[in-house]
Length: 155
Image (cartoon, rainbow, N blue to C red):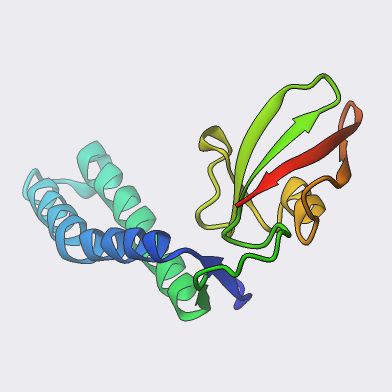
């Protein structure tokens, strides 16, 4: 785990806190009960339920540590100032070379979800758009070559 500064929106922060709360106060108890029930079944060396529950416990504890580390090194994105340039928290529209329009929101890596148009400020696409203004053309290197995007609107 790194102690690198992570940017997040206020909504994203609440989601992380809620996930951590569920893991600590619900999932931990559930997994402890499953482990106890599996222990009661007898020989632990051949007990698949016990092994599965211990694996899940390990996953939950790792996720808790990851979330706690993230929350310690977090910067909440304040209301963005209208500068006309893409910044963390900005939603912006672009057109590619084939005039296909897309809308993106630049967020921190913990909130990134490309399927919903939320791209990380640390991703190659996010880094390419960061600081650029409406009307600018941005070249983004992709495995198939380079794609040029023109920023049509920043809000």
